[in-house]
Length: 459
Image (cartoon, rainbow, N blue to C red; front, side):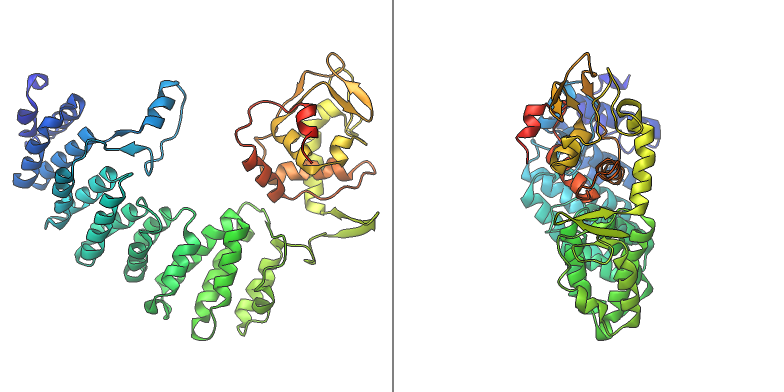
């Protein structure tokens, strides 16, 4: 019965020839929580006659030390289902410098399986410990050029889980030396969440990125696709600034980046990139010496908007009372279809409202007025009483509350809102998906419908 064995005895079984015995010994060690056996485990790791025993011993050390952070334990106690962020929500509070140094030393072991395991274990143990992460990065930077391919792959994965931007130089070096390998490229991309533009700037500063190769082209395209997929105005603006500087012998880099961005804009989620003003480098890009760049920019322009853009007001633009009326055919048709499917059952096919269900939308000040209020109503719902065109509505004349529509995408919500704001002889300012996205983020903690008084405080 292995359950009666001491931690030292169990540690001695980690290099047993029987896999079941090894796995059971490791499980019992971790379940025991006995930190006193860590020296025995490190001894097994150093002296085992096979790599399997060393790997089991290292993971046993990790299993004893790692635990969920306080914040996660509180959420777990609530009984809710939640996701765990491995970058920030695990910690090893009992990890000592001596144990850390012992684990880190295995990165220099001659066996590649042990090196890979040591990198993963050290990545886990160093979470939340800046000094240990810096030491791990330094060790990887010093050794990675001698690592076998599987270890390089793990190094790329681990770098993306360490502190940013400190890990970016290592990732840039890996990209420079091994971007022709698909798995390395994908491993690097998986760890760059929100850091794609900064990483791009890192690699473009390197002299070894002046010459084109198939791997470098593919890496640049992947980075550009990731930036375009987010539709973030700030990051996309920096991306365009970076592209604009690529000319002459570096034109291949501009062409690679723009082709990647265009592919995402054309075949991604379909949302537009909406700027508050024309990007400062746009004029320069449209007159780039490369005809390929100019063609790509022209095609990208269809998927972008800013005041003064030829498609900003889309297919029809008239001026009424000093305001422009915007109508986008595709969005309008989508909005009409969604309205009939989702909203007409309560508000009527022509927005006239239904007795004992919902007030009218036609000529409603809630629809024609502040877009900030209307977006909030759509995202989180609204509860009565409320006033529409001077008339008070409350149960039983209407339902207690309007349900939220937050499950819809930003583009779907904006198309519905634009439909009701510009149908039935109404003309109101156009709402873009980015407007919905911004307010969705601002009100992400909201869990109950809005009241009239709350909304009237919002301009």
